[in-house]
Length: 552
Ligand SMILES: Nc1ncnc2c1ncn2[C@@H]1O[C@H](COP(=O)(O)OP(=O)(O)O)[C@@H](O)[C@H]1O
Ligand SMILES: [Mg+2]
Ligand SMILES: [Zn+2]
Image (tube, rainbow, N blue to C red; front, side, top):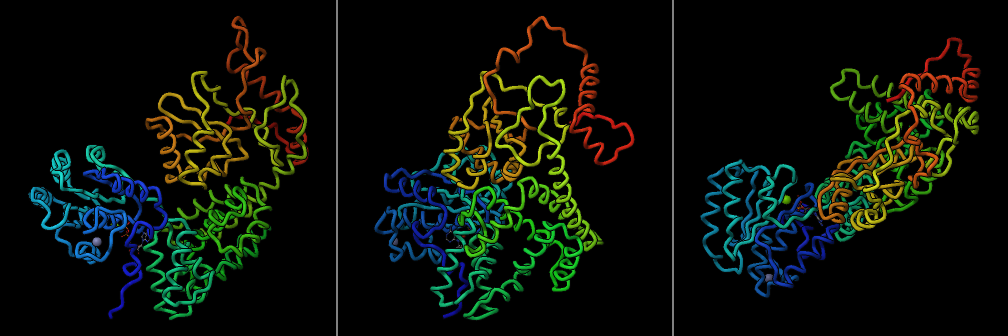
């Protein structure tokens, strides 16, 4: 028998075997068992997450000789032909190579004829977003008046390119990226069934490199097996993937945390001479700091942190030395460095500069701790102590924060709805929910949802800004409110959670408001006279008269 690649050999043939798409599979199974089949489905999601696989299982479920059934037999002629891609009633069309009007016209013609043998004629149109405008219009006509025996399953990796007119005719399913843990477990199962022994760290490196695509994971495992045979070792896999050894990554991170620039540079040399490139190191450091942040936020949850279970304790020890702000700063520097490296003629220089900047960022954080020693008193002339959100932290915001614009309190009409959203989000992604749990407030007003975080939670807020996380929140809030909402996440400089306004805070209507610049001058004076600022100036021996500026 000829060799079959793992991705094909291990294509799930039943709903139960599909990994990580539970909600979608359940809904489809219910539709089948209740005989409520839609005329058109749209499967959206990244590549290699099970869209085509699920489309084929659905087609079999509809056409199986013993069906329609949620458990197609995989044995009758109808099922077998779908598996081998030779069914005359289940047609797969790749819209990427059949983009035009002619193909869709042809399709419209063939839609008219009944299935040759099976119950349904099923059209699976892959990468549907690639169709031309005319082809979309033609498809739309078919979707508007579908014959009873036809089912369309459209699949796309780029949902935003599918016209709304098509979307509104389809029942829409989002296919999630497969989590690190799910990929890890599926590959472990496949390896053991294939009689391949693979080190846990090697498997972990593959699962991480797959970035949410199970097909990529299976292809990488294929390559590892053809390189190593039935015994797969971590080192060979790391060479294959071109990834920096975990231990070296940890050493670089440790040197940054210890503020040891010299060691950092020596390690860079070691990484580069071992044949890795600067960009790889930067990307992997991002992954490493992401893991540290995850451990910090969510604890040692093996579902959320992309490392082998045995490494979790060590991560936790390291993460305890960092604040969320430290890690956020590191991220920002790594992202900037990644950008600079692209197309740079001096990649090594950029890499070294970036890492030294990280060492300095950690110094800056130490400076903030020093400043914290001066804090504790209220500002002179300030009627109330400045409000701080959340538990007190070692690093306060610099004094200039008092000057920062704070947004007005939310209008009375807005609703606070954090709990509801948290619940809806946690159904879809516990990780997003755990980060969102760090917000102190969420309000809906008009067509937007505003979620606010205290400064100490900047890390959670920034991680949530990733498009896929925003999308989860948007979906949950849309579900909750019954209409789409625009999601905005913001960090508010040291604001207290909203309270009912006390009468004292509301100025009497008759009060005369001094002109803007007068306020600024007063505040300027107040800041310069502040004890903390004074001792700062003293410690750092500032000679000139400092200028007070408003941060935007
Ligand atoms: N959710 C999944 N569960 C199990 N295997 C999967 C899953 N997604 C992808 N695979 C593996 O990857 C291969 C390609 O998946 P496919 O369904 O074609 O992905 P796509 O989402 O790009 O259509 C499958 O044959 C299977 O081996
Ligand atoms: Mg596909
Ligand atoms: Zn069958």
